Image (cartoon, rainbow, N blue to C red; front, side, top):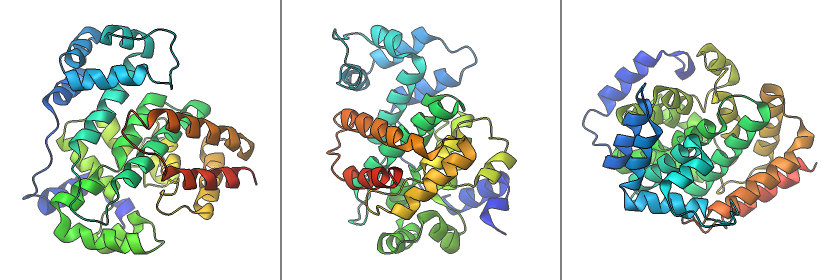
Length: 309
C-alpha cells in the first residue's frame, strides 16, 4: 500500500513495532513544562513567563534574540516579561521550542550528517514558511515557523538511535540527486516526516504541530484529505520544497515557485521580495542559532536567480 494512503493508526503501529527498543532523546524539563502549559486549556501567560525565567539558558537565548539586530530595538530588553510583551506569546513560544529542539537533538556519529547544513536548511525553510503563511493569510505565521523547525528532527535522531536501518538510506540520498522522502518510502516504507510526527507525539508536542510536521512531505491534495487545508500545513509543505544547502537546485526552486502560485496564490513577481526577506532574517538570526550561515548562501543565490527569471 502506498505510504500516502495508509491511515495514521497503521503508522503508529509500524513505528511502535519498529522502534520498540529505541531510546529517544529526552527533552529538557523546562521544555516539557512549557509544552504542558501551552497544551493546557487554561494556559496562562504568567506561568509561561515563570517557566522561561526559571531557566537561565533559555532566558538568555530569548533575551539574546530580542536584543539582536533582527529586531533593532532602541533600548535593551532585560526581562522575560518585557520580551513577551514586545514579541507576543506565539513568537516567544516558537523561539523557546526552536532552541530547545536544537539543544535536544543529538549530533549523529556519522560524517554523512552535516550539522551546519542541516540546521541552515531547517532555519531557511522555517523563515520561508513564516513569510508564506503571512503572505497567503493561511494560519498563524509563528505556528508555521515552529512546525517547519520540527518537521525534519527525525533525521538526526534516526541517524543516532536507528542507524542500523536508516544510515544506508541516508547514504543513498547523500550521493544522489533523489529526494530523501522518496528514497525512504522506497527502502523502508515510511518517510522522515512520519517519523518526526511519531517522535513529536512521544515528546507530547501539541497535536496540531504534530499533524502539520507529519504532513510536510505530503501533496496539497493529501493535506486537504487530512483536513489540514485551513492550517499552516500548506505553507509548510511549500517551504519544505526549498532545496538543501548541500544540493542547490534551480529546478526545485522553480517547482517551489510554481506550487506556491497554485496552492497559496503567491505570484512569481512576489519572489524577489520574499527572497530578500528570507536572506535578511537568516543573516540576522544566524548568531542566535550559532550558525556560520555560509552554506546557505548558494541555495539563496539559486533562489534569487530563479525568482528573477
